[in-house]
Length: 589
Image 1 (cartoon, rainbow, N blue to C red):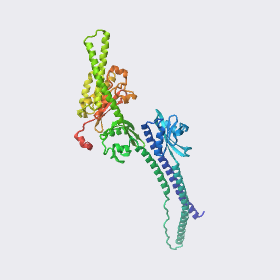
Image 2 (image 1 turned 135 degrees about the vertical axis):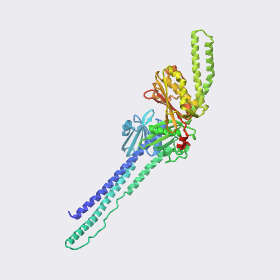
Image 3 (image 1 turned 90 degrees about the horizontal axis):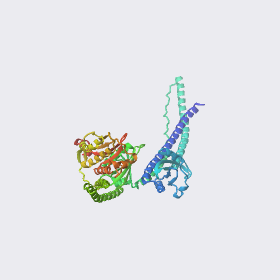
């Protein structure tokens, strides 16, 4: 093989390898990027669909309507499937034809979602005659588990990839042709240099002087796949359009939807948030920079720690409403989706019920007093001598006294709920208020050898109404005494938190409250052990009164289990800050 042929072959091989390798690499990268983008898009739609369907109360009746609405808005195929694989809703199938749809329990994505949080699969759809990618996630459906499946056709990606392959192949062919010409000319140039070098060397040997010539090297610009980039741009525009369509669904929701990152920067909000809450809110700004909402700030802090949280809180001072706020954290993107559900009308209905109970209690007060007075007169006036009659009368007196206490508690609760309880919010020493309550319950605790221990992290000034706070603390201690075994301890302690809040807890070591009852302990008349309540006394209204008094002061109460046993009842209140703390915290000035 001649020198010219060897130089040509080496140069051509290197250029061809670089061109072909570059083309394959571009195709591989684009394929991966498009697939990842489709998967991410499906995951985002599935998460929001999951949340929307849960809030909408998904059931057999509305399944197909919800699937059709969401499918039309997002441009994707949405299917709602029960636990046994029956299809109850499909955005691409008429409701009349749903009975003819085969059972989906053996679909790969459904089988994966049964064992995991979600299932992803890809296959050819005979119905749509195209490749489809499916993502299924679990949702509550008709009282049991079900699935919502989001499907995206891969036809656009396949077309884009086909165009990319065509462009890459064309680029490789052009590169090969270019390599042939470059190799041919470079081999001639290199061979010319070699010939000149040999000629000069021969002249030098023959003592003939000569100056070798120099020539500039030949180079070329690397090939760029501009048309492939345009196709990719178009594909991304299609995906962006689908996101905008889905955002349109969020805009029309009655619930407020807010998306925040870890630093509370606003990433997204729907029209309800803008119109009904904060008109000044803008994407990209820090949520709490210009918005004062301490209750929501505290809620979000707990939600980041627990990943998912729901709680009922009052709206900010500028909004006279009550909201059930739920938050869910996306660990992958470290984002928090917050949904505001207005429950103001529900609270109005509850108010009507509370007014009714208050009116009935007021009307019962007089006849019960008459019954009690007559029973006392019969007993103490010795108008009856028959032992059986005396026993019956004493029973009437005991029950009338219990009814009097219940009616009094109901009237107190109605007064609090009606806002007729006058508050005097001032600074009070926490230790002094606790000691007063402990002293009032000391005799009751001593009878059962129960110790009341106080552990204060710091004896601070708290901002409360002294009477209301004492009622709440007294109810907590009374409840702890009723449920604590003899020879045990009740601990009263406080924990300082950020934002000038302190949480006061009353901790007992009794049997505790079963998980299924924990959300109901602050309901009126609710008792975990109704049989025991008859012997321990009480009206079942103490904790309900405590909850309403706390909310009247702008605070929250709650309950959580104490490990290894017992219960912890708590109230979070503001503590007074000093002038030095004011100077260190500008927003307090």
